[in-house]
Image (cartoon, rainbow, N blue to C red; front, side, top):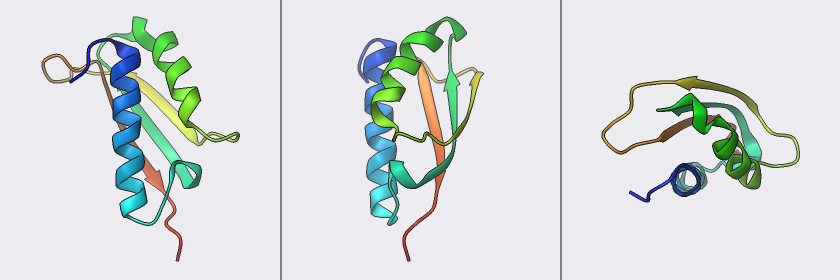
Length: 84
């Protein structure tokens, strides 16, 4: 697991993107995202990296502080529309 909120956000979104592609969707077809942060103070840094990955019209997003696993700073889940 990479160190730092930016690196972990980048890795997490790359993993989400790979999962979505495998299911016939993409970040561009994402409808809802929930971001879990271990520390709410990481919001601005996470958001800057998050914006690099989201399309021009980003999906609805909720960001909450949560207890995450050891060393984890961010976790993301997404709901996307798969192409038919």
